[in-house]
Amino acid sequence: MQLFWRNPSLAFPDLAPAPRGSQRGRGQNMSGSARRRLAALAAGVLAAGGALCVASPASAIASPVLVEASSALNANNFKNATATCAVGQRVYGAAFVVVDGLGRVAVNTAQPSSNLSSVLVEAMEVAPVSTSWRVIAQAICGPPVAGLQRVSATTSDAAIPSKTVKASCPSSQKPYGAGFVFTNGYAEAFLNQMVVTMGSGSVTSGVTVRGDLDDTLLNWSATAYAICGAPSPNQAVITSSNYVFDSATPKDASASCPSGTRLHGVGLIRTGAETDVLTEDVGAGPSSASGKAYENDSTSASWAVIPQAVCAS
Image 1 (cartoon, rainbow, N blue to C red):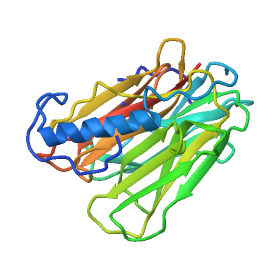
Image 2: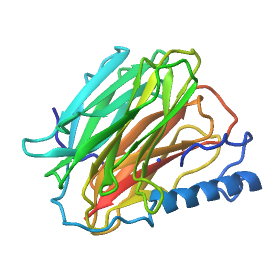
Image 3: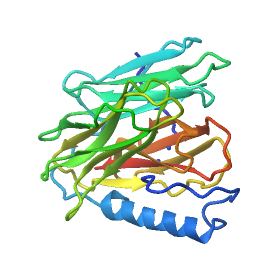
Image 4: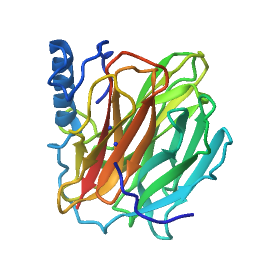
């Protein structure tokens, strides 16, 4: 197991298909309908859990530590890795990075353990990769806040192309991190959403996961994990603003925590080209989240990868 900080280079719920075309740029060259849709989507995320949504403070927690574990670097078509927290610490957030997957590797598991001691990541080739590759499991660990727990929710096991599920925190708690599992999706299920919501009013806090099947219709299920606990000072979800919405590939983006706060968890928003894009990086660094995605099938559709950083003092 390797323990080190990784320098990141990460992501809006996909509520409607992205427009097809060759628009380029950060929105200024989008069609009016695409621009309005993304603006409404961003406003919804901010209202429900974006950069302006801050949890009520409780007590400050010790600075989190990023633990990373790598699989073997080889040409095998399946890899896994488990990152384990030190004794006395618990997982606040799960993250992952595929190295040299070249847009041909699907991550179907980023699972915090039930006792929040570790994070398991599993990945599988969608198509043969021309080089050796590996997957890195990341666990953001620290002394647990009061009531820190893993909450989960699972869809039915059915042959449905797209599945969405939300794991909600209890009303007295806020989300620190996220995770997911696609069971029996193998390399056909692609992660499109792992959205962290810092709820307020009628909007519940939690994590929404969406997966989409690429080609083969399988009996599969999607599980969302929310890591919930007592609120901390300055706790907020920061959604990336440096993403690009166009048809270029690959894409990466990042979301950084404000000064005086540290990263506790990560989330992902992927919009456009639902079954044509593979997300290979929902990664973590000392104070920022990263995301990277590739086109799996050539597409003229515009799309974006938009990471989220869950931050707290």
